[in-house]
Length: 138
Image 1 (cartoon, rainbow, N blue to C red):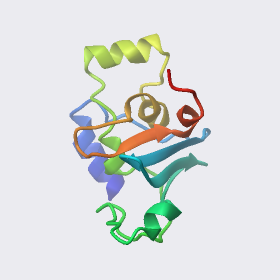
Image 2 (tube, rainbow, N blue to C red):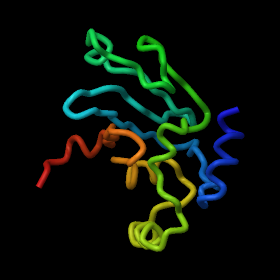
Image 3 (cartoon, helix red, strand yellow):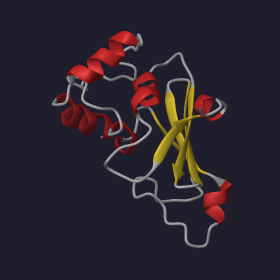
Image 4 (tube, rainbow, N blue to C red):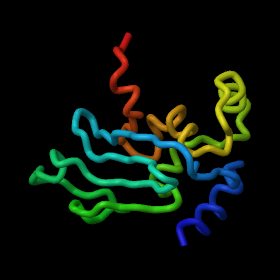
């Protein structure tokens, strides 16, 4: 169902060819302001999402609508729309230039999410690739 819906919605934005890579791993931290909310990862061609212990223990923690159960480990063959919306339309000249200059596979959801997915106007969360957390800011 999610796969079919994703194909319909994102075909218009040049994202109909996006695929989940089967042979790579990726890890992301979902953050709201200074609060670590959840972990998104890609392993063995499957996407995984779960809330952090810190977020689960907050008395006023409200789950994200797409992930309603705080104690559940979510797994999917396709990237959830909550995260796909962070990938810009690939038909945009500026996006095409970045893809070309940085040698990004334009069909690889993990690579595109790492490069473009940090923020979105659709929600207030920040998505940070785990390898970027280890890099010093400067």
